[in-house]
Image (cartoon, rainbow, N blue to C red; front, top):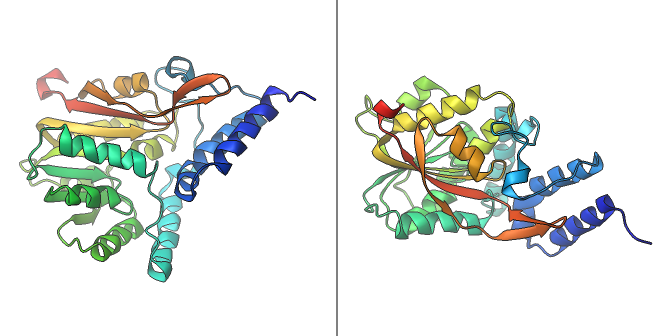
Amino acid sequence: MAMDPVTSDVKLVGQLISTSGASELKVHQSHFLSLLLSFSTRQKVVLSPDSLKMSDDCGDFGSSELGTKEYWDAAYGRELKNFKDIGDVGEIWFGEDVQMRMVRWVSERSNLPTSARLLDLGCGNGTLLIGLREEEFSDLTGVDYSEGAIQLAKDVAEKEGVDDINFQVCDILCPKSVSTLTKDGSNRFDLCLDKGTYDAISLRDPTEPTDRRKYAVHVHSLLNEQGLLVITSCNWTKDQLVLHFEKEFELLQELPAPSITFGGQTGQTVTTLILKRKALDHI
C-alpha cells in the first residue's frame, strides 16, 4: 500500500537518523524533531531558500525553550557533569564539519594575521576557539551567558593543553555586559563568530525582532572598522539574514554547505555568511 506524503517523509527522516553517526545524530536531533512536528500538523516543509520563509523577517518556527537561559543553564550543567565523569566534551552545535568550515575560512581565507582579535559569541564548550588556537591564532575570547558553558569551555581547554583563551560570562543582549569586552570601545575585535547563538536568540520569539536588533547593534559595536562577522544559522536563510543585518553589515560571501534532498526539495541544513561591518555614517 502506498504511503501518504507525511508517512513517506517521516520514513525518510528515520532513514537519515539511522545512517547518521552518533555525533551527527546528536547535532541534528532538534532539526529532525522540528520537521516531524511540522509533519504531524500536516504542514509541508520545503527546504529551498526562496520558499522556506514565511516572510522576510519571521521564521517558519515558533518560540522554544532553546531560546531561554534556563534551558542552556540546565543543558550545560549536565554536560559539565558528563565531562567531569567521563570526559565527554558535549555537543558540537551543527557538527564538526560546520565548525571546521568556519575554522578553515578564518585561517585560510580571511587574510587576518594570527594576532587578530577573535570573539566567539555563545562559545558553549569552546571547541571552535580551540580549533582556531590550533591554527596559531593567539588573541581569542569566548563568551556565553551560561556560567556552566564557560566552566565547561575552561575545563575542555585545560584538557587540551590550551591555557591562553579568555573565556568569560557575558550576555550579548546586555549593554553593560557587552561593554566589559572592550576598553571604552578602543580595543575592538577583528572578527566575531556565531554558531547557533543568533538562532537561540531568535527562538525567544521569532515574530518579535527586538532581541535580534540588540544583537546586531551590539556585535557592530564590538568590531573594528573593517571587522567581520561569521555567522552560521539553521533557522534563517541567506536572504533573511542579509535583511536582518542590513543596517549594520553588508554581505561579503556565503560559505558553501552540503545540500540535502527532502520531500522532493533540495536545500542546505545550515547557512553560513561572512558579513562586513558598515561604517557608522552608513547606519
